[in-house]
Length: 112
Length: 116
Image 1: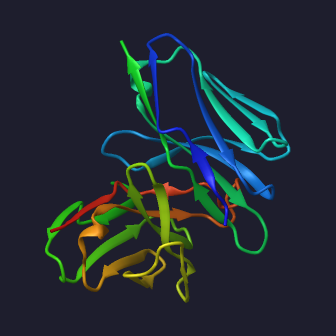
Image 2 (image 1 turned 120 degrees about the vertical axis):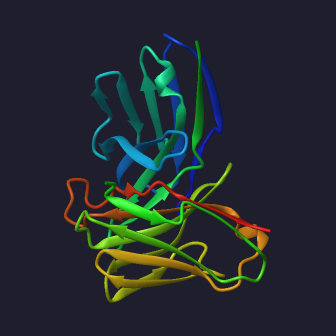
């Protein structure tokens, strides 16, 4: 089955850029997503990228997709303490059954 | 009010007890899911349902069962709880005709279950 991997922890200083990385195994992924989980809450969709795109920018967020290497990254510019959360990479496989597979999650700690 | 509501939010039980976690949604979505979250393991799919008459096993369905009572309600049962089912459980919904081809999931706030 599909496997989505992330590093478990990232620590950055407030004001710096954060880069969270993700690798996936199934080349038939149609959409790739970043979800954010704040403490005590469920996950919320942060941004997404369609598989035929290389980059997507949304305010402080930049998503880069390298299909050849099956690598997805999320860059957060000017990281704030409110960005402290767990970030999950996920992908959607196409075909008759549309299934979302989540990564292990990366806990981002922002140091003031 | 939350669009996806889970009850109970916290539950402590003993080994061997039967537990039901309930989920209701007001989003009008056909698709509903139960996930389990464990530290370092991310979210793993337990069961999913694409409409009222459709129930499917996910990656880790052993020890769990579900019931889709209505479009808006999807419950998860542990027939005989065991300690390694201690986890945070999430219900989620999606729209098959959504802009991201149903990949956008809407989550409840989670139900924390502890089995002693």
